[in-house]
Image (tube, rainbow over all chains, first blue to last red; front, side):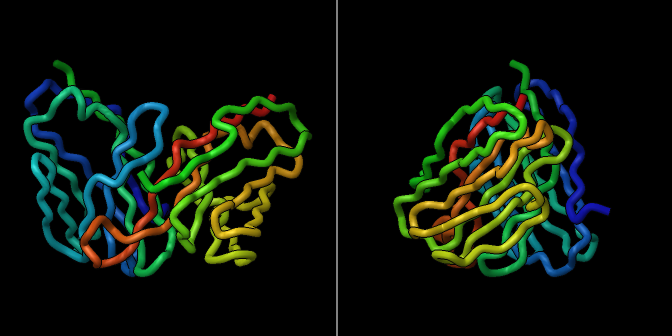
Length: 111
Length: 117
């Protein structure tokens, strides 16, 4: 079993839809839960982060972690064509430990 | 922008030739990382460095070596390139998570696309 599982999609939604992206993980030592967004032929960029369990909201984006079920979610409200990208979940342990990436989910938002 | 540059940005080489990729940072970060990204595998850690001359292996280190003689430069070398090393290579540095002060995460460079024929 890989440490982080993520459905690679692709996922295609109409503009304005609510998008739900999810990952599961197996390592209970993970403390930080990152979401990166990667546009085509670009490097990943940090989109959202959560420390331990709970929710974090930033504009149209909400990151959610349930440590009891080892489940990570990213919700995008009122999705826009500019949200079309690959979304990577990446939990990590504390300190400068490396990220462990899911495979990424490719999202297309159709105008 | 984490002040990371990678060179070259694109490279085509032949099987069996040595290849060196360079990562350069301008903000004096101690930790640096090399990842590769492949379809169906996502991003996987190759090697990382926690200081000048201090390095450690990652998940997919076979066939790769690294060196760090200066804080700002982290080199990845493919001693004898193989077709399985065709990939996109990303360098990253570790820095604080935004302005939160709660921990560190990695910030990535623009990547190097390597094709081994």
